[in-house]
Image (tube, rainbow, N blue to C red):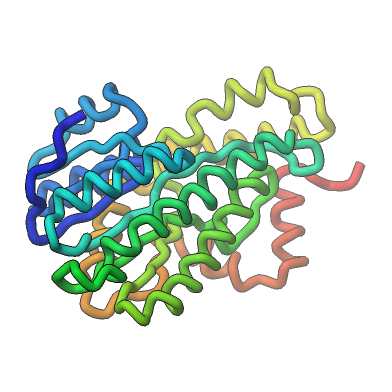
Length: 293
């Protein structure tokens, strides 16, 4: 990994899950416009690929959000690089997603979602709060926390129960942090994208065709849902567009508490989030072939 001990520039940000997708796009975008970007990655291969694709001051950092040791080491290194200045922003982006019917999804899979998406996110956030503004020794304006949630943080789709449960938790945590950290002037903002062209669903088809659900009562509906998600991964918003929303959340003098960059937003989010739940149930049941047998 690159030595990150050199002094950071005036604007600095830590981005978790920066190997691919939204995290990588945000890291490249912010580095290109003059930020010092500490990019959390899982391997040297990811670090090398990110460095080669970026311009500006981008510094890969080994960061598995489930490892207390790696989180602590990353914060120590970033704190040293910042000298006595504060971190401008933390972007909580690291996350996993696996499809499956909750009624039979292995508990290990469910717990893995929370280990990364919830406990890992809070572990990083707690460690970053002193750098963002609670340490009175550090100078500069207080920083901001930007958390990448999802449409699933507001609308619970079938077959994504584990993922959407964590995203609902992320939404609640963001609201709580914003209210609690006001004593330090640290803001907390959620970004809930719709379909984005990222590799998060790339392995879903292979896993489900040979996995534990292939012969279950949900096999056909899950296949329809899977195809919908894979198509969204190919036709959704480019991650660079989400990177621009992240920049706005970090820089706007009066940012929203939540941004929702969603393709066909009226249909895919606004109406769906306002429909009575029983009505939305009927939409999902019809669309994915979940009618009672």
